[in-house]
Length: 109
Image (cartoon, rainbow, N blue to C red; front, side):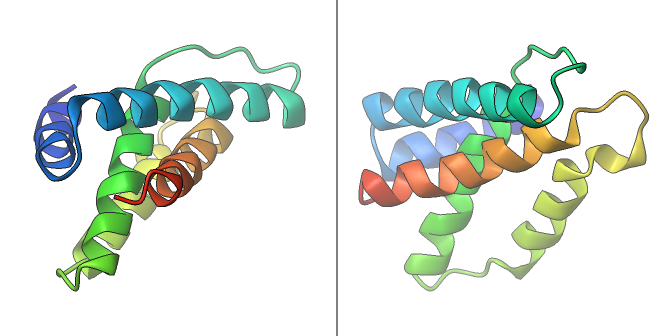
């Protein structure tokens, strides 16, 4: 949740409360649906995919606006892979990040 605070405040500042909520909500929903589709025996529900969606939106914003993004990419890869911890739904993290990236593109942030 600390990651949501730091990245969410930035994302909300550069977009809007509505865009931040849409990115968070759509990323979590899409990520869990897509994850369930490719791994039907894995059950997951949580905010981590949504948080990575916001991170994907921040990543896209920084790339489009010429800000430093390479460290963000390294952090995203680490977060998507779950830090190597067992029991982490890696596909949900991956789809959350991608969905956030594309939602921010659609919202033109």
